[in-house]
Image (cartoon, rainbow, N blue to C red; front, side):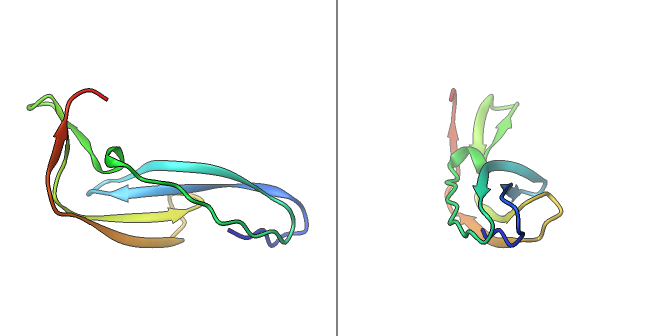
Length: 94
């Protein structure tokens, strides 16, 4: 991330996962001085790709491709990539 304006400010880096709905899964607020560049790292865990299955009463991650988008808002196209989950995962509790 790079601050190009003349005044210090903040930006919220947002990560969305589409499966198939686009959902906010992680975010981080970053403070930058004018002209400053920062590398922002945000890890995605199993929760970012999971949903609650009411019928099974468990959390589930289904195999398939998930589109991951990074930007400053839901409409910001920013960076995107695809993550492939090959094995189904399920668990109860946190």
